[in-house]
Length: 248
Image 1 (tube, rainbow, N blue to C red):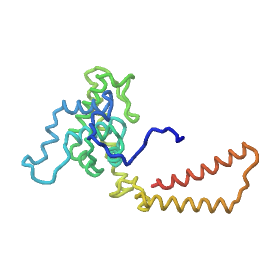
Image 2 (tube, helix red, strand yellow; image 1 turned 180 degrees about the horizontal axis):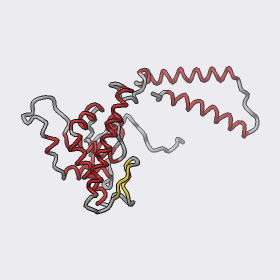
Image 3 (tube, rainbow, N blue to C red; image 1 turned 30 degrees about the vertical axis):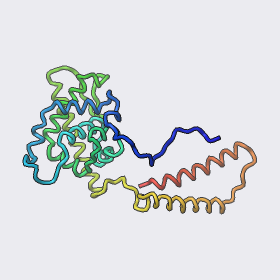
Image 4 (cartoon, rainbow, N blue to C red; image 1 turned 90 degrees about the horizontal axis):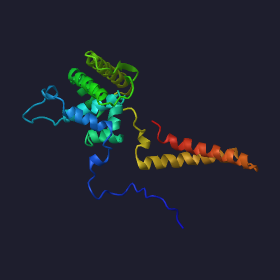
């Protein structure tokens, strides 16, 4: 009798178009960011785009603003890592409506709209505190702390922390541009970037592992503890080999 497992068929096609609203719980921060951005005046972000519709289509500024504010709010600074989240993070995929701007587009948008983005981000941080999304006496964003009080100077604190975050994001992108150039930096090597290439690499790596074991010719221990220890060592070797297929 076969084991009773829940099916995991990655070739199964969806019969009905999925609804993005079903992907993310209603109480997730992403929805608050989307609603907060929707309530803001984004005219300063729209002013630089042609009104006649000519030219190459650009990503919706409202989406880009929500993407950056959400990413910065959860501690993400790198445009490259934000691009990766557009593919892998469910909340980000909901915010972008399954669009995936590349890291260059993300960085250029931040540079182009740095001042209004900082002001709006400061407002969203203040709204987060007033909405009770911060359950401690201070808001901490990557080690930067601002008192979450109701004083008339509190908004200045939020604007300052927003500016610091944008400065940190700019410096992160600069360093990663020097390191990776045009690449995102987490791509697999060419020989491992396709299913066929990975299978071939793993087949050869497994063969080399088996050959090395044959050369070592370790006898199987008689005692059970030693047998378990040897089995663990072999499993660790196999795991290490498979992990190399995903190493950058």
